[in-house]
Amino acid sequence: MTGEIERLLKLQDKDQECATLAAQIKHLTEQRARLAKRREGELARIEEMRRTLEELERESRQRNLEVDDLDMQIHAYQKQLDEGIISFKEMEALREKIANQRARMSAMEDEALMLMDRIVEEKENLARAEEELKERLSEIAAEEEELASRIDGVERALAAARAAREEIAGRLSPSLLSRYENLRRSFPDPVVPVKNGICTGCKLRVSGYTVERARNTAEIVTCENCSRILYIR
Ligand SMILES: [Zn+2]
Image 1: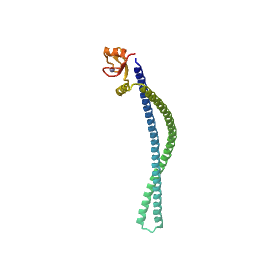
Image 2 (image 1 turned 90 degrees about the vertical axis):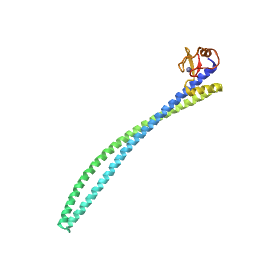
Image 3 (image 1 turned 90 degrees about the horizontal axis):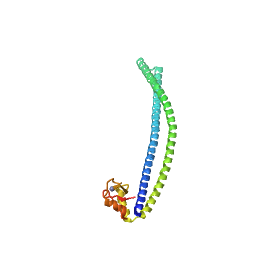
Image 4 (image 1 turned 135 degrees about the horizontal axis):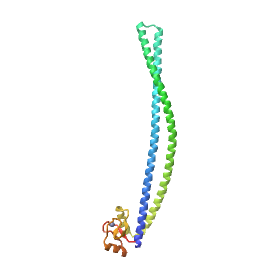
């Protein structure tokens, strides 16, 4: 194996290391995005509960206002009755109105009570959910912190691998480097050994002449099928 092939193999190792590290960063970054989604989901759930509670409180206030309103009307009718300066027929009509309003008021008071029960229940649910939320958010924050430090570590390793790669690349002849880089656009392994007459890149047999050249000459020999650079250990 010539010195150039050895340098090419080192370059290839570094390139593969860089690719592995970049893939790790991508994976960790995706994990981080999933965590952010989880946080959003947790917050949205609580927000929904708060909205439900607000809606119930609004309804409850509305019901109480309506009850007050009816009460005032009943009092007004009652006053008219008590003052008695109206006809018997009008009095009858007023009594009927009062009875109707009382029935409506009683139904509304029942509704108002039911709403208050639900509000108490929803408030308890919300308080529990908010406690759980605190826990979940701190779990998410801890996971995020751990991920951030892992990403940081891998990014530093990648920067070091890239620097080492550039250093090795600088020791190769520019023409060989550009041949290698062209091949690398098609293959993750542009430099492969020949084993038993077979190119281990494309798994096809190469000619005996190619094997001989790979074994005996200092020149760079390529696979006649896939064009990868060949060597024999
Ligand atoms: Zn091949």
